[in-house]
Length: 221
Image (cartoon, rainbow, N blue to C red; front, top):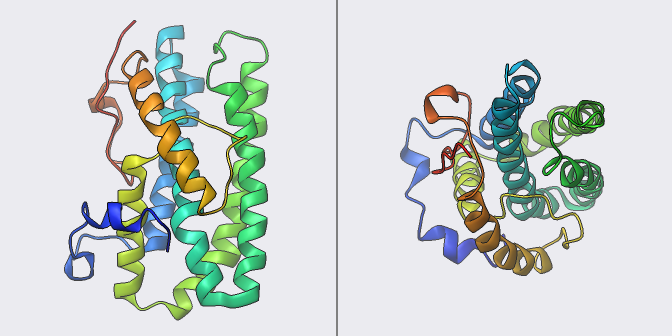
């Protein structure tokens, strides 16, 4: 799959026999649902501090999700689906780039900036266009040729890869393996260190919506 696979393999168990392990479609869908919730929570939070916390949570989830798809899902699509898989992956990467550029502008912008919520709406429009493409094109075609065990293994790889990826948007970084692997390894430690200085929602507020763990960071200043 990618040069990260040996590293991720050390973190992974045997998902094929785990009844609780999601398939790849379920894992990606859970992430999409979580990201939608985080976006809504930015809008409905009652204080500026809470909006900032949800903005940071939104950034953290979306940045990791996008790069993990590019490193784990798209190479499998290209391998299993041939030329059609490559064409679909190219569309996905192009759509991701639009989302990454939106997120790069948004991730440090204060929610009290007049441009913040219009930009968030643009980002979510771009993201939902991408989600529709994945849901209607990518996942049905891929799941059709994967066994359930293969799908669960890919989902496990997707989830574990997120543990070692950047938590911020870096749209200037390469978005194809193996160049992206190197860029991710460089950016991730810096992002994770800076997360220690960022405010996130308390874990109890996150609910059971994420396909992945919450950031082990809760700061209030």
